[in-house]
Image (tube, rainbow over all chains, first blue to last red):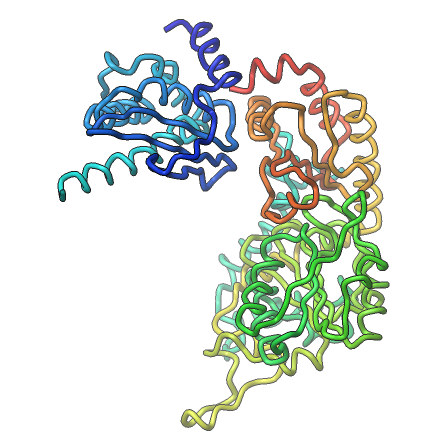
Length: 146
Length: 398
């Protein structure tokens, strides 16, 4: 992806983040994600029905990269099954960590394919993923037990 | 000034985070290196020459610290791992035996976590009550505001001489005078004051003063607790072990050594203490008054330039220390810090460990510049020039 286009996508998602709101609905699962080494701190709300992610919302304070990454993640994950979402997260994290990854399904999240060049911002890009993966795994464990 | 003394300054770097830690001059590194390479023995127990030299150097630092803060007695200087340990030691070792249910501990909301959490624990354990001094419009502490929260139950006033976010210099002398008339103990965190200004514990009449070596050109892992002798005598040592006991037979027959050794169990951070001694000699060679004046000059220079930028909000405009806290309108503080990092400029973003401060200032996260005597007007020029163009900040913040 062209660097200028990447910039534009990140900036657009930072300035107008998708689903940045808090919803009063107890059927949403909640998780907080924060970076211990900095001040990013977001709350995520996730609605899963029949193993499918129906909706995600977020709120909180975070830097441009964390905010944009969360906004993009939300767009990409809505509509996916929990298995698909967990695979998406794995591919994304592999990309950020410079490991082998499948770029085919990452969509807009590919704007962070060279974030590793700024080592101190990798944890900004992965912030929302570290939170949401916990919810998805818990959901699957619970589902397995049912 | 004195930039040539610092190996860290021999690179392309503008370091404006001295409130977090300071750089170390060569003389400090050499003093520590000399200990490890030519007389690396333990303290207080050798019958041979190099161990004797360790004792001499270790105790010499105590003398240097005593003179640096004008303490009356050498045994009033206790070496710790840093201001955090010093404050915990005071809260636990001394006040655990004094505070009772219903007693009141007075703090401010702009204190560093190290001067809040030990008091929270003490209050919780003893059923004591925490009260906060209301701050004025500049977030300063005034004697009148202090008086408004003191009651006949107040036992402790604990506050920083200079806070690490607002950088205001508190009227400690007047506070101590008032407190002592009312039988209240005063604990002063000197982490942000002792490295930057002359501090005289007798003139201030503080009961306890704590500070860290690493913020004053010394090494990490070393700090000081100053306490009035009669108060330190009443301390319950938190750590028991080697070096601090005179003799022991069984659980009922344990005899401890006198001050200050009694409160320094185990092998101390010998290299750290020796490094602190070298740092004090170094700071003295420049002069604390001169350091303080120069930092004020730098601050005024910085403020005059920053206040001209319309989209920069200076949180602590009227403070007088080298700490300047600001935000760029509508840009997250961490993004500003990342932007400056591209130009090898180090500033801190966040809450700066003072997580209650947001309740006072209404601002959760900020960028903080904290100056030291080796910073220059040229560095400030470069820093300010990078903030002159908001579009550039936005374009380069990631």
